[in-house]
Length: 386
Image (cartoon, rainbow, N blue to C red; front, side):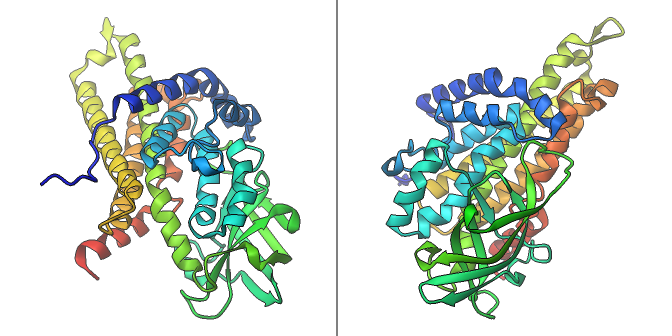
């Protein structure tokens, strides 16, 4: 009997129309800004304003808070199309949703009503503050602490690798509330004005238009009303959130790979050697065929993981499938973008063409929201039952 929950593995007509609209928007409004954003390594407010005007800052959020209520599959479509034009802009789209997932899933209705409409409208942005200098892959080793003080909590500590540091005015912060390794962490929503300081901004290989930094909280007072989930539930909140965000990092990786491949294929149709386009070289054609197949396979796995999240993970397979989607898609992005640089030869190694930027941008997708080595540990535990 066919499972009524099962979605088609292909996009619906409505989703294809939506995809076409976002692709045209990305080509017209985002792609022309990408090279300059990478060159200056500055946050592109024109790109963010374009996302606002297009309504994309709110597409990921429920209608109850002013959003469009898009499915995670639809959000993956947006992430891919933006990433095909500019990976930094795709991260603008993804980061506030990541930071607000704990609010959506574990916050009080009062907190949701207070903050989510502003994020939807693009007047607020959020960051996800989980990692620390010595607690990245092993987040349970965090030392940032929160101490109860009546109806408030006093938070002290530093967080590293924070996307949108200095841009966001909302931070979802995970802090230690007891010494228990996994049950001693609690999540809080913190306003930047309460005392979140940016101590450092990193100089990075790629996604240069998205600031990444170290934030410091020094005696920051947070009302207990801004606690997300129960005391000691923070580790579960963090993992629940990452399970639902990792597939969209996979979508970003697919977009970077597809953007590079699309450009390379066009170039190969125009660039001639020995009296004919280089795209007629069978050796290169086979490389293109392999790249296109891997991109399609990665997209399918990403959409499957997103569909599982949309269905509410009824069979408990999202953690495994999301890890597979993120790891596979990001590995594909790194390989495909490297091949695309090769397709362009010496020109591919210059910033006159976008493929070298896309290769640099692709690398981070193998690292953030859990390195691919961590993803393989997650996958192995599910497969091997350990």
